[in-house]
Length: 213
Ligand SMILES: *Cc1c(COP(=O)(O)O)cnc(C)c1O
Image (cartoon, rainbow, N blue to C red; front, side, top):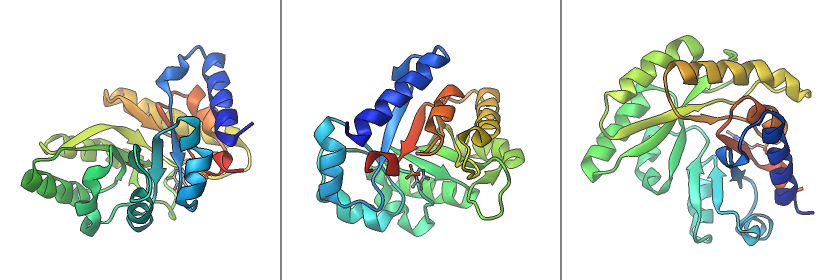
């Protein structure tokens, strides 16, 4: 069985365990670190066209070789790279007013509205991007005031631990914040913990290595 087919089956089972419709959780196939040929073989060949990349530079080279893809930017975005971002369906890493301002300025100039998720550093880890949980609401409110920035939801990377259950409190906290802010999307869960994320309400899971092994 291909990695993609196996991951989809696991995702579906996780949804059914908690009574969710599997169609509510979209799988973002994270192609970072894998070349275009490998992405074609392991992802696109199975009829899956929703892909995520972390770095603009790598994405620019790869996307030129891959057609018919809905791209999501999941990695940290620098303000000087905003000009490349129109092609992304969603940006998962809004983390500052400064970046929101840069998106707004570009969007106004080019008549484009960016669909974004706010990246939240739920556990307050020093080595991680994203706004701290207590600061998230203010940044969402700020972004809501910008006509060319559409805040669709929240994203997090759970603290890494060998045990996927260890990620559950972070996912639950993000969901609580999402509900409080009345947003729609929850981008959470990676190869090691996507089933727990789906159980906790993820609407996007971002899975890379499990698809290519
Ligand atoms: C690389 C990456 C993923 C996928 O990680 P895997 O462990 O390979 O599934 C998901 N989200 C982000 C933000 C990433 O950088």
